[in-house]
Length: 178
Length: 87
Image (cartoon, rainbow over all chains, first blue to last red; front, side, top):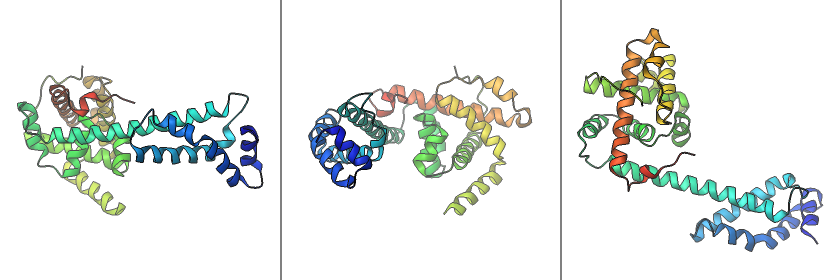
């Protein structure tokens, strides 16, 4: 049976699960081989393989043989999943490294002063402050990361600024964003 | 849990005299700031005369915090955050 016939069976055949299992079996080595180009950890490769297979099953109706081979379409899914995985992993590492950096006693006096004030804030405010102004995560990204609403993030950030100003009790002239 | 969080926002609002409109204005500026879109402080503060001078003070503090953290990251080029690229 050709790949195109298998795809048709998955879409409209009497036993789509059986047909999908056969298709997956044919492309399993292909999927793993390409994932291995992105990640080396065995557990990650297995997780991504499962994700790719699920995505293929969910989107099989979107495959159009006129536009290209099944292998090419499959590779697009593999590539997108792997890139998404790597971006997420990279961001996690950045946050951890950045948070560790923020907890070193700084030699920069301005940073030392800022951290003295941040230390007085609730822990989540400090995290939000570092991730927002230090790492550049937006309000929407912070809300998603911490399971908060955007409104809650906005209030915490504005409150952190209010507390910092209050704690320092100074006006900072000449601040420009350029 | 959600109610607790909402009440936390109410306490903050009371403590610092914040309103939805005010925190929205701060957040919009700050988002532009952290995305390195160089928002103009004077022009932005002028859009909300009803919040003068408090909004300006908040925005100046945000700029200072951003600059301080950025300087810290630049001083540690080997650290993760310094290698960050935006999506």
